[in-house]
Length: 277
Length: 116
Image (cartoon, rainbow over all chains, first blue to last red; front, side, top):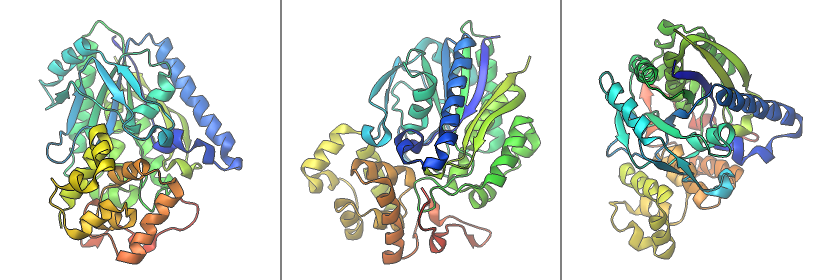
């Protein structure tokens, strides 16, 4: 069973860059979130994962609207990041080890079912660097980045996101290497706008209930207009979380959720899924 | 209006060291290849976050430009609010997204204070 772990976690630049701005009465919540991320790191390590596939959201770090893939996998030998000002993000410049042979094998198989683009040049922004900062703090686990266009409509439909997750799973299952997958994105949030910090907790919890229970029908029923209205443009990133659920196939366990850290501009979420047979 | 050109320059600036160096050295030269209106040119050249937001620049692009300019987070948020007060609602782009005859961007209902 080469897929040995599938989970989700939030990303946002504030999680690292604005940690010091958390209000004193919320520091315990922040620390509990960080502790849960540490447990996720340990779960990935103890799973025996030899590579980590990070399914993230394209934030214009690699692609622009002159050529925007719906899905892209980084198959290069190394990746770099963050693109952002390092003092702002509070993550220094890194060279991240890729897994070119494994990634190419996975991409070849996925292409039988998904129109997956690939790139041998990959720059990571906070969408991948923040998760790696917690999950592979020593940058000693090869990383295969995948991005889904979640910012530049028209966006890939949710049913195709589900297919992407299933295709990723199928491709992982025939590899000899143990592989972990994390989907990283926000649920409701209005990042980098005047509404940053707003979180629709009710909507988030309903989405998470659907996600943890693998309720495919309800997960795929969201329209982009509904998501935009209730969850902001950041809500389009549910694609990354749905992909991780589809890849896992099993029920999820919500390990952390808090809407109490608006300075991070996202509801803070950590969860893992059972890997179905 | 050439929001595409504005965003493309900022996209290149955000992710490319050479573009950053060129922009730092000679803004006019760095911007010469982009088909910008005078208003757009001034917004980028002066680092007017509020105007760029109103012009419709995506936050994921604008936020990184703010970081490049070393603008503190709360100042960045305030600059967008000030931009709406000064220049009016967001004109184009994803924050002016419409559907079912509703305009979703809540630029007239901005939250003050502690939002981050």
